[in-house]
Each structure stands twice: as structure tokens, then as C-alpha cells.
Length: 222
Image 1: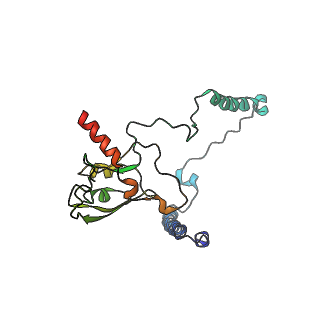
Image 2: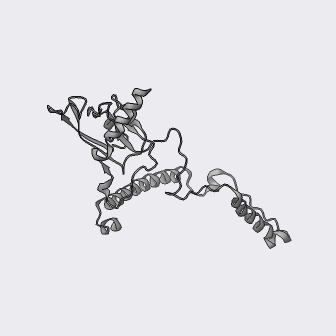
Image 3: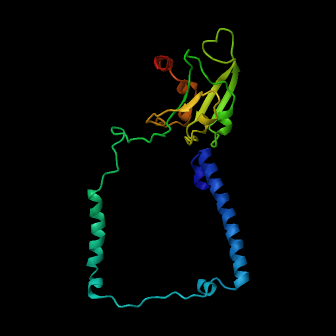
């Protein structure tokens, strides 16, 4: 707790207080259980509790075992065996690992074939989020904004806290308008030194207009 206080950071202090409170609660519960065990058995010796004694082998070591060469050779063989295995390390970002077909990457808010935002600010994605990472504020469409928003109600503010998001995809499943989905972007969240940079707003989440037009052309072609 002193370290959390000295860091001059509220999150570090909050984490230290939480760790201390958890430690106290765990120790109290463990202490009560040990006291109950002591009252029932009258001893804390495991041999007395189990009724079995540990068998210790006093077998005398052979000459080769005393030299320890065989054991050293076995350990070296285990180490050398890994030299000929396939390397699992990749040189990121120059190299990119092959992703799973069900891989879930960065979020994106969809547009329809006319370039209008699909989101109607119903809030189902925020309710279904187990990490409570989604925040939104609904707005009412004004005259002249029919080409920007598909419905009369739209998400005026839509933010995702990428520090809390676990990329489970439940927001995508809960959305009735198919407005939010997780892309196959190789880069989940760009690195940054500022925590506020990890709060993604509509400027980072809404699908680019040229991408929406391209998707519409591909859909019409098919």
C-alpha cells in the first residue's frame, strides 16, 4: 500500500488496497479453518492426521550415481533436443503469425451500402459486454442527416475501453443491426504511453466511407 501511495497513481493505490483487503480476508478464513482442524484433531502434524508414515529410502548410491555424469548427460540431451525443433518465436512486427479462422481483432462500426451508420444506440452491446468496456450516448437524427445515420436514433458517442476489452465477441453477437463486428486486423491495439489513447471513439471505430462503398460494390457484383 505504501508503494501504491508513493506512485502518485490512483490505479496503483486502488490495486494495492484491493490486494491488501483480499489478503486479510483470505488469512482470516484460513486461520479459522486451521483453528477448527486443531480443535477436532488436537494436532497439526500431517503424519498424525493421515495415520501414515513417510517411507524414506536409505539406499546407498552406486559409483556412477555418485559421479552424477549420467544425470548431467540426460539433462544435456533434453536441452540439445530443442535445438532441432521447429522455432516458435517470430520476429514481430516483420513477421506475423498465422491467425485462426475464428480470430477476433479490432472492433469496427459498420455502414450500410449508402454509407450510413448502422448503429441505433440500443445499448445491447454494452449490456452484453462482460468487461463493461463499452460506453455510448444516444442522439436524435436532425433534418439533413439522413445520409449519415440510417435510423432516427443513433450513437452520438460510442467508446470502447481497449484496456478492459477481452475481445470475446459478445457485442457482435448481441447487436440486432449488425452494426459492430470484430475485424481480422493483425494489430489489436496500437501501443501508446497515454491511457486515454486506448479509449477508442467513433473516429477510430466507424468504418471508412470508401471501405463501405467498396463492400457495397462487391455485394452488388455477387
